[in-house]
Structure formats: structure tokens, C-alpha cells
Image (cartoon, rainbow over all chains, first blue to last red; front, side, top):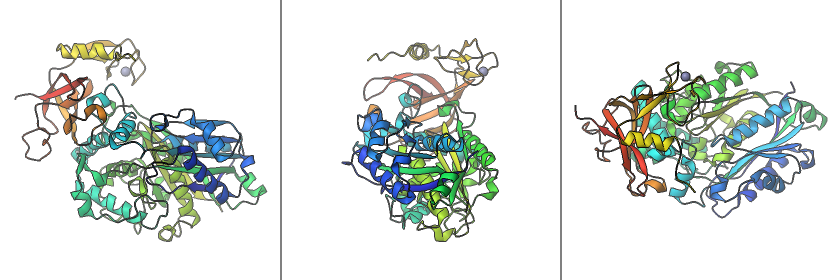
Length: 388
Length: 135
Ligand SMILES: [Zn+2]
């Protein structure tokens, strides 16, 4: 197998850009990725692009050729869709393609344009990631689904809204220095608790915002990096993916995400590491409860113990295992089809030492990225390591 | 665009008539239609078995921010309840939207419910409705 290196990462500022086209957002992210990589666009052999709701938000299907144009590459281009894990699966296929020796240079990432829709439109768009016949028709929204998981978790393991509020406060604090984050403002535990309800027990500050943005990554083989004298010290050493039953009601357990556990096991095995080797994690905290379920599935907390990790300071910036130093989806923002790529960009920057929060993890060598689709019917996990 | 979903609509018709059913595979796994094989184990044939008259709420939420199809329904309560071999997700009727106020007299995990069919206030669309059973 060929070693896969992250040659360059590029992000747009995440936030509200209702008038900007998807093609312009992705072009900006790709431009930054190429500049960071020092790789010639003409060397790109494939584009793997993630997008979820472009057909609704921009009336634009068949986005991959459009994004190849925007990025200035001419190569096979494919759109990947796995709801909020769309960029995660796009990255995974890029990593597998380079690892298999099928290409030396692959551009991957994603884009989502969401704020041009009103709140009801965005709520409808996100809801289609659930089972239309048996969930959406029964009133299940995206926050509603995670609220069902949160209540089931409290019932199984205990925990409270205050525990969740500590996760919101932690991730907002982490986003403060992140130049790409949507919210660079503190939120106190009290403010989070007092915010209005969205889908009880989840309130506004338990939820990620509606976000526009794009991510792009240039993956290369280690040989290509050496031949072209690239500065690409971070390798993707493990990739894994898992699938679960689509509807929450059909899962064995509502308060756990076995698809993510399956993805994590596969990624750890691929990398030849275990959860005890992980120095930092970027996880899919579309809602505060999702961070709890994520760290339990990744083996970074025992079942029932993830809920207290932020409150007890284990996952804060100064804790043993910082989680979502970027600010997470919660504060950095969640352009759904771009998120999986942005997590890889953030872990790469943290490991390279050029992230504004790298000072909290000066000796980190192993990072994981956890990207989930829907209510984690889809999950993708990647392991990144400092290779040189 | 046809609004009809063969398999699902027949199941809703049956639930409305008080004859709701689950599909059950030879291994005993339950599922909801339309199915050709068991989603858990891939086996067939699937038999139609009557749902128990009462289910038990396993989790619920009070939704305050709806999608457009539920604009006039919000706030509303959605719950997941176990009925024998399957769980059903439905709108809870017969409790107020203040169900989560903590006074314990509305709905909670463990509440016994019966399943039927009702209409969305917003557009009249048919929905699975769960109602607390007087005990
Ligand atoms: Zn079966």
C-alpha cells in the first residue's frame, strides 16, 4: 500500500454567505488548498466532491463537473452524497485511491450552501437525511432526531442538559482564535441552558448553526511528495466507514452509534493503533449530544461516561484528550457537505503545528476525525499521524 | 407526482382500521413495509403479524422548530414507542405541547400508548398517532 500524505488544506470562512454561489465557495477552498500544497493543478488525477442538498438549495444537480471547472482541474470528477458525511466519504475514496496506487494526486472536499434558504427550508432540507416514510412524516426533524437520542441517553446512562451545555461552552471557547469559524464568541453554560428550546431536551445552543462553506484537500502519495519536494508531514494512516439502519426506531439501541464504532474499529486497525494512542479528535458535534455519542463510539470514553467528559475537563483544550479544538460543528459551523473535509483540514493543521490552537497539543502525533451522516446511519473515521 | 407509496399506504390503512401489523422474518426480526427481505438478516418470507394493542414510549421530544409540513402543528410531541417486534415513530396526541414541563402528568419514557392514524394540522397529511392509554 502506498502511504497517503495530506499535501494541502483549504477552507472558506464558515458562516452566512447567502449570495455566494456554491461554485465560488468551492473555488476559494480549492485555491487555498493548492496554495498550501504547492501542487500544480494539472497534476490532479481525480476530484472527489461532497455535497448533500444542492439540488434543493441551489437547484443544481450534477455538481462535480461544475466544481472541477471551479477548481481549474480537468479529470474524472464525482459527487459523493452521504448526508452530513458526504465529504467524509469523498475523502475516504480519495485516500483509498491514492493508497491503492491508482493515482498520485487527488483533490477531495465538499461544499454546502444553506443560508439562502429560510429556517423552515433548511429544516426541511436537513430532514430528508432521515427516513421519509417512517420518520419525517412523523414529525422528526434533524434536531428532533438528536433530541430523541439525547433523551434515550439520559434514560440509559443519566446526564443532564447542564452536561450538554458544558460541551457547547467548550466548543465556543475553542473557536475563538479560529479564523475559519462561524461563531468566534463565548457562550457560557448559563447562556446555553437558558437559550430557547428547539426540540426538547435540546435547545438553541445545543445545535450547530446553518452554515455556508467549502473545504478542499490535496492528497498525494508519499513518493509524489518526495519527488516534488513537498512539505507534507501528515499522513492519513487509517480509514473506516460504517452503516446502520436508517431510522432511529429500527436501531438495536437509540442511545449509541454502532456505525461510528464500526468505522473507528476499521480505521484503527488500518492504522495499526488503538484509541489509547489518540492525542486529539475532531468529532461530528452537530448537536452537543452527538459529541458524547461520538467519543464513546471512538473508544475515547466508556459508554455512559462521555456525557461528563467536557464538564470534567477531560476533552477541553487543556484536558488529556482535546476534542473539537477547531470549535467543532457547534461553533465553527456545519456546511454539511463540506464538514468531513474541514475536519481533516483542522486535524492536519493541529498536527502540523500551524493551527491557532496547536499550542494546546504541542506533542500531538495522532489525530482522528469522525464524520457522521443523518443520525449516524453513515459514519466515516480517519486516523492522521505525523509521518515526518 | 403521485402521493401514493405502495406498501406504506396499505400499512397506514390497516393501522387506521385498528389492524396494524409488523412484518416478521423466520428469525423473528420485525420490520415495516414495504420489504422483500428482512433488513436485519436478509431472510424471507416475511409474515404479517398483528401489532400488540399497547406500546411503550422509549424516547420522545417536543419539537418547537418544524419543517414546512408541520408549520401549524408546532410545538408538537414526537415519540418512539416499542410495539412487540418493531418500534413506531409517531406524533403524540392527547398530551399538550408542554409535555416536557416536568410535572410528570403528560408523557414520559415508559408511558403506555396505543397507535392509530391522524392528520397533520398543516396540510391534512396522514400521520401515525400515538395516544396515552388510560391505565
Ligand atoms: Zn431477520
